[in-house]
Image 1 (cartoon, rainbow, N blue to C red):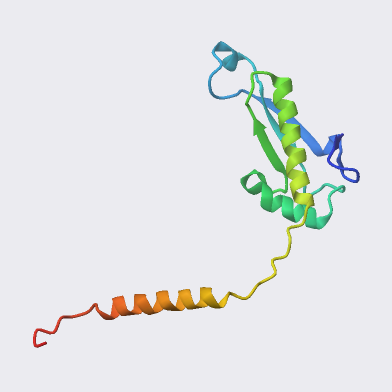
Image 2 (spheres, helix red, strand yellow; image 1 turned 45 degrees about the vertical axis):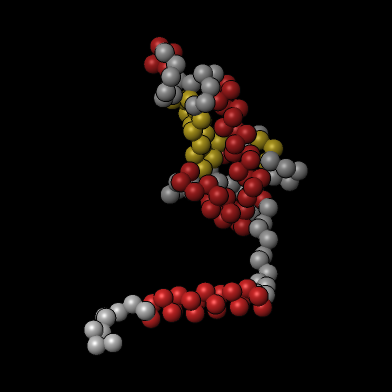
Length: 140
């Protein structure tokens, strides 16, 4: 069981781990031993996560969110299978923690008078530049 915070914990049945061969340097070891871990968390079916948290997790996870509602993390940082497993679990907990905090609502503010003036001056300047373009009249 993974503890995210006081109220939320991820059960073992929600996680599946698969060990695969890692890419990159490692000599013969990389060809023989499956040290990389693919951690799969069935987030959509999880009874421990409230709906809004699942929605935020989906947005935060991005490409790691699969079409069937699971979060898949692949870790092949170290040559140790156990350490990669720990790192994957830590990353999953961090993702869920980030999804727990609701983003603050943005309160729109009025632009200052000076910023409005700068914007309008810039627009007027650009307008004059564009007005100077166009066909040249040889008679003038």
